[in-house]
Amino acid sequence: MEIPCNFLDSIKDQTARTLWSLNNVIDAIPDSYWEKLYCDMPVWKHVYHTLHSLDMWYINPLVYEEPAFHKEGLNDLDALTEGFLSRNLLKEYYHNVRKKILTYLDGLDDEKLLEKPDKCPYTRFHLIMAQHRHLDMHIGMLMGYIIAGEDLWPRILGLQSEFPEGKYSLYF
Image 1 (cartoon, rainbow, N blue to C red):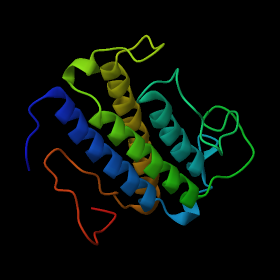
Image 2 (image 1 turned 180 degrees about the vertical axis):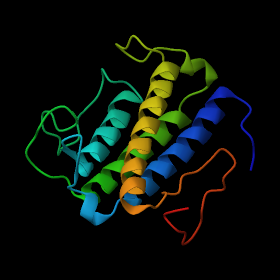
Image 3 (image 1 turned 90 degrees about the vertical axis):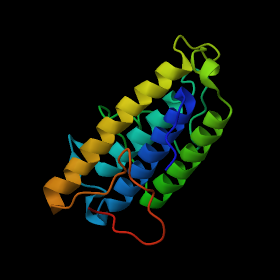
């Protein structure tokens, strides 16, 4: 494993590890939990909230287009909303968000990290760090639901972990 030596490569490495971990945690959620309520909201809404925030805030929250399936309040964990988002739809959304973020990072360099995106009061670096904080909290919450209910610990990638290839267990 090559160790990153600059800010952008470190961000790319940690983003790839965190996105892999999020995908695995989503896969590790038992089907029976998808509509189970935690803090008065179904697990699928916790997943959508996490993905939507990542999609909106990682690059530029002020120049953003909602996904076609979005409805008012759907991403808000304090708002009751009607409807249901399937695992397949949210997995597709995850893959779109992942691709968007990785493409975005490929267009940056260390200098651009300290610039503010169009109409935004925050630097790119600030937005990225804020989303890592937010993402890690929600991954932890989703893992907690699984650990408490199933006594299974979803696999995540640490700093020195190799990315799994082929078949692997969703859990440690």
